[in-house]
Amino acid sequence: MIGRFESILFLLFCFSPVQIYPQENNDLIRSSTGVENYSNTDNATFNRNYYHNFHDWSMDTLPDNYRWKHLSSASGSLPPTGLGSQQTSSLVADIDKDGINDIVLTDRSVSPSVVWFRYTPKGYKKYLIDSSKTRIEAGSAIHDIDRDGDTDIVFGGDAGSNEVWWWENPFPDFRETKPWKRHTIKRSGMNKHHDQIFGDFDGDGGFELVFWNQGSNSLIIAEIPDNPADSDEWACTPIYQYSSDSEMQQTGSYPSWKGTNEHEGLDKIDIDDDGIEDIVGGGLWFKYKNGMYIPNSVDHAYTFSRCAAGQLIEGGRPEIVLVVGDGIAPMNMYEWIDGTWTRKMILPGIDNGHTLDIIDFNGDSHLDIFNAEMRLDGGNDDAMIRILLGDGKGNFRVHIVAEGIGVHEGKISDLDGDGDFDILAKPYNWETPRIDIFLNLGKTE
Image (cartoon, rainbow, N blue to C red; front, side, top):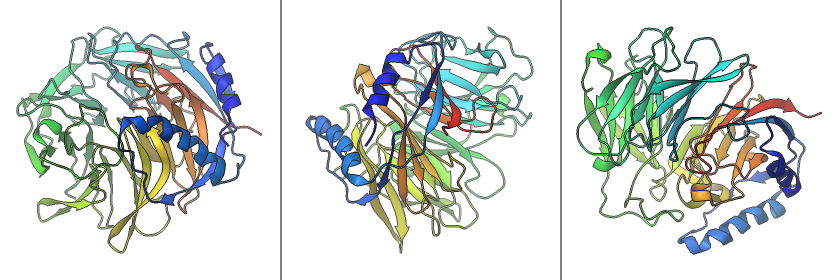
């Protein structure tokens, strides 16, 4: 059973400058077939209670404990973000090429709109990227766009903007108050661009940018120009369009602002083992063939979801995981069996689980799932940051990193250069402006 006692201790002491927290919440769960129909928000309390009961009856507790060092701008152990009340996006990348990842945060409500936190041996130091107020949406992408050997960054406009931008990394000329040069990828058409990703999706050896444009109900691919710094707008081509007239009854309950049949979420993986990376998102995966991107259904009842793909069950095609980003719905895993994506519920009742990734967290050669929940508008006070430790057969042990910390667009990556996975926990509007980091101190004895 998930230990509430440890969680209460965490909440009592989480705002100390440096917190070290041992975890013993490691229930073994096996994915179960079928999906609960969370059809309205009145079921939210039931869903959360069901989630906790799920851990009671499912499997025995197994020891697999990790210790975490919690840093936070709320406690003064991280610098203040200097952002506003709507921190929309984040990314992790080695900006300064020192071999250790740095952190980028955005906000759409204030100026500045983009800042980055540079890792140093003495702690993080904040730098400016964009001093203007910019309507940035959730989602991000990184790539050496101008081919000068450093990492550039991409963010898209929200429902109030029809633009997508990239910022040119000024390496090695970093100054705390000097903005980066911003360029435009898209400056026409419809608004809202939730999620972007780079990859070689046509097998030509070069990278393309793919992004959703929810205002036009489309998935768009953009080729990087020969001279991207001199281009006013990249060639943007819709490769898939969906109707907003109607939709299947959707899995879960959602906020009123969700559009009919709205699609989001992006990941990449070679689904069919043809040597070409495929696009995954919106309850679909897309196969490149003869100059076209062919949509293949995974779950049309879960188009408004976060997605991640990886070999969670060893052998066969990689699995796809979908979870609700905004709303309440289960976390589902999809296994390809003889042409059918067979749905298995991993966890029910996820509450605004706007963070999802697949990684090998514990180095056992079996892939694991990272997920965290939001505390939108201050609600969901038992929001969880969790890692589901996989066994390569579709079974998972649940490791709870923290409870009560709101996370939106969180990241799991090595943040201190010691070779293991740490966690960036960025809220959207919970106690913002704010940033939290959980440094992995390894397993307890």
